[in-house]
Image 1 (cartoon, one colour):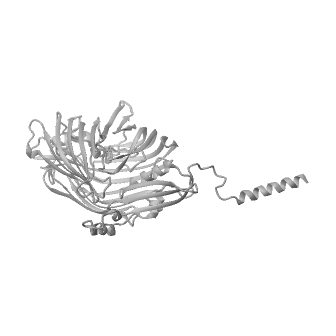
Image 2 (cartoon, rainbow, N blue to C red):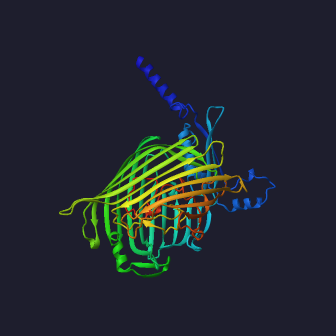
Image 3 (tube, rainbow, N blue to C red):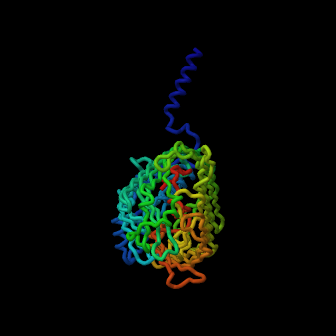
Length: 598
């Protein structure tokens, strides 16, 4: 029967399909499928590459024995591919970049080896950083002083878990606390962080859950965070023969919840998200609890006088606001590798392309002193980025701005408050034929306008004109230009650590900008030299020892400043973040899902 013949053919076809090897009907994979993943998770020092007769070889073995090596399964879980997948060069490159971004991994290399059968073997080669940290902080800017102690393990159990306790005392800060952080909560891609303890004026607690956009291939991100801190804002007071700072205590209380998504392909991604946030700043005993610091000794204070109180009154207003927030942007970025920009010999992943993100928040309820209702507002944020990399040249530039549009209410007209802006550009030149030499140019502008929250910048310090103390020349708008020559030397022990020297020149100007105690500094310059080193070789973590002094009329030898920094302080590795500006930003939801907001 004709129907019977057709039935037999259908049965045979179904049987053939069910007996085919798994994936036989899948789309053809021209590069070849991954048939094996080999992980070489090395400790701090690769002793196989050292001369058996090398001096202090025992010390290398001891360091490796004491170190908690990153577990193979942790590295495997971080990879954006698995056995059976079609080889995708983008996912290999992104996996390498994600591994290198961890603070406990010094180097990573991910590459494929074609096999005779047409498949691919993938090699994942990593080397660890030293992660058991016992840091005794000290500073020499205004004379030698111990600024704190921190004991932490940054790779507990080889799973990237940070656990530690610390005591930090620097200027108005005096924190005693414990902290814990994991990049893989319950073996997921959720990051979690919690810390708590005491401050100079009370207590603090911070908590956050964070699901990042995974590399350039992740499509979903989310964040929840909470911060509660009793703290101080220290205004610098210039030209006072007795007092150097005015301390304003306040309670900083905020939380946010945000989710986001991305559509498109790596190199052309549209970003969008929405969330809720609450921000609260309360000056509970103003002005009775304001204090003046005697000669930079924060343990010796006097009650604030009326003149000082009036100088900061406009920035000491209670405010509690609940907001709904949205953001959208376009991310046309890719990454290129550069060696020896900020790291002496290590590889850095540099963004190339453009990114534009705009965020908008609308208040649901705003309260002031004593719970008094205040006008609502729109909060707008804009972030712009541009980067390029050419033969010998690397450029990254970023601009961030935000403001509050206060809505009109009754007879009260609308206005724009809390305008903050910063723009930074880093340009690197690595001359051809001059291996180990890098010239860095930096341009940075930061400022605030009509600010209704505690805010003050200074011209001196690590992030500005380095020949001046970080209390020099307070103001509200700052411009700084720098040029720095960095040289790497394969000496004295390149198998143990990277070593280099630097020379730098800073030029800057600060204006009062309407902030309390602001001054016009005029143009100020400084010159300095320094030593830079990193351990193990190829690491991105730098330690700097810098000697800097102001130059120009009135400069004296006694004005020389010695600074020791346990990380690079200028360039793409530390990023575009300005700590003095960040401490004044209050809105919870930033238009990004790359980090927690504090």
